[in-house]
Length: 131
Image 1 (spheres, rainbow, N blue to C red):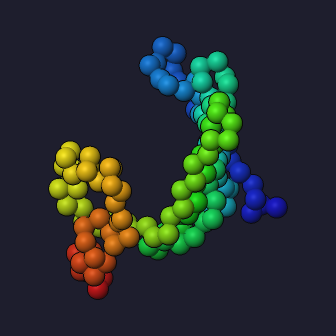
Image 2 (spheres, rainbow, N blue to C red; image 1 turned 180 degrees about the horizontal axis):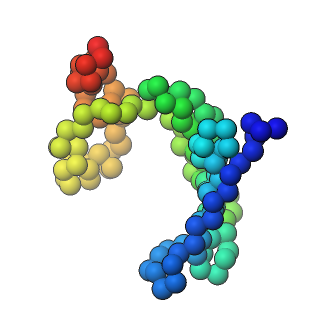
Image 3 (cartoon, rainbow, N blue to C red; image 1 turned 60 degrees about the horizontal axis):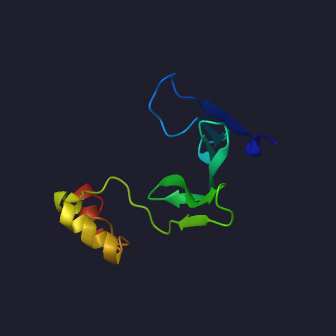
């Protein structure tokens, strides 16, 4: 059925380009062009990493994949799964967010961004004028 069809795009580097990947193949869902899968190959054509997108849902009025699974082909059993519960778009981000020391500190302890990058949801909605 049309609803399950995928579009494949093969990306190959220009000859002589300094790149990490020999090629990347992207698959997108035909019905809405959202990503479905990505496959990364090394310079010898060996599959190194596969990323799968699933559990599509509306987040902040946009349809997105809310689950991303990354599998490494060169290390069996190594898998990373990311699940997005809440995604906020077009919110103000304080310049302090990108301060080098703050980034290091947050990476060591983790950062809960459930309220958005710049404060509470009420503050970010006020910035957008959507309160």
